[in-house]
Image (cartoon, rainbow, N blue to C red; front, side, top):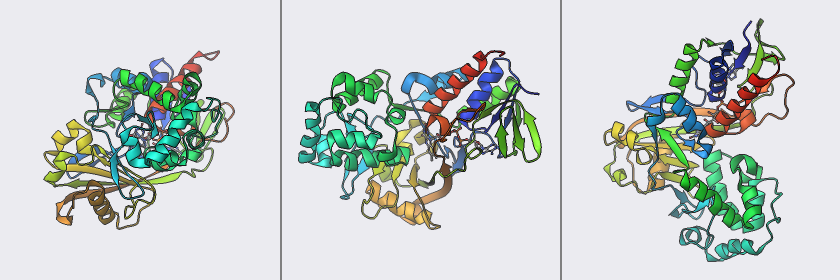
Length: 418
Ligand SMILES: Cc1cc2nc3c(=O)[nH]c(=O)nc-3n(C[C@H](O)[C@H](O)[C@H](O)COP(=O)(O)OP(=O)(O)OC[C@H]3O[C@@H](n4cnc5c(N)ncnc54)[C@H](O)[C@@H]3O)c2cc1C
């Protein structure tokens, strides 16, 4: 009987299985599909190997960089083009995102790049929050509520909502502040203002370099190296086996049972997945006018922006120098949608043309790919005797998941009898 059964071979399960096996425990990893990685996936579009899911990671705490380094990828970590992204507002105008901001919350509400989006009056309203005692809004239930209370509806609706929609595929009124902006609440109390709190956190991340980073060749290289380590540490990886239920001390795959202490890294086993859908459209296009990166590294789109169905566009070849080299003069554009019909290739071409301000003709589209993901909602309870890792426990994003999965395995390895 193995010491541990890890259910799910996404980044959460892979990190847990590796850490447990590296410490000498016997581990079985059970994965429903025929490959590992989950949402950290790869596909080939127009002859170019690309990430089909996560394409960067937060540098917060050096967590993912630490993992990449341990996997031998330290020298392959790259920073994105500092040009940054733009915002397509509901009034149809495109502007660079405010430089000094955190999830759209401005560090300097009267800065020109803020008032260009929300107007001077809303900027003045937001500026007033510095005069309001820090306890006002500090206990807000959601990021949206905190922003609305302190800085007003314009900052919430015109800056924070579109950015959160593009980055977290969520409404800020449903987002836990401490999950998406760790340290923000404490910094608000310490500095006395939300704007100052943003500046405080921003200066921390500025000291640490860019807020996000990538890996030359794609984030999916993490999975390749994790898989190699599982083999090295003797993990028994079982693909194409869907776990149907888990109990304290064993998991069931249909009628078969695998005994061992359970580490659950797969959504949908304890509770049905009722998460949101994310549809990604990737276009490889041949258009030299895009060499100038007309909208920096891409665009976030406010709800209701006229004539556009995408919620975000990443100009991947403008964002990552290694990818521009590989694309040999072509451009990779990645658009995300909450939902999309069968005509997605055409919708994405039209959206990309509008967002980038460059008319992309059908014959300039070299290739197109569609990928669909369903993102899970957080687990609503802590199951007895089962350790849960991955997105349902840690929230979205590699940094949060790697940190929580590592902390969980440390705890498991320290428990009595281990
Ligand atoms: C389009 C998109 C882009 C993203 N971009 C970024 C980004 O740039 N940076 C970032 O940090 N994050 C990004 N994320 C989020 C990030 O990819 C995820 O939070 C993270 O990869 C989730 O990892 P996980 O291990 O929790 O789950 P998953 O990746 O969902 O893995 C779960 C695994 O469990 C398996 N499984 C499911 N059910 C069973 C079962 N019953 N039995 C056995 N196995 C099962 C699945 O097949 C899968 O392999 C993105 C997400 C999406 C959808």
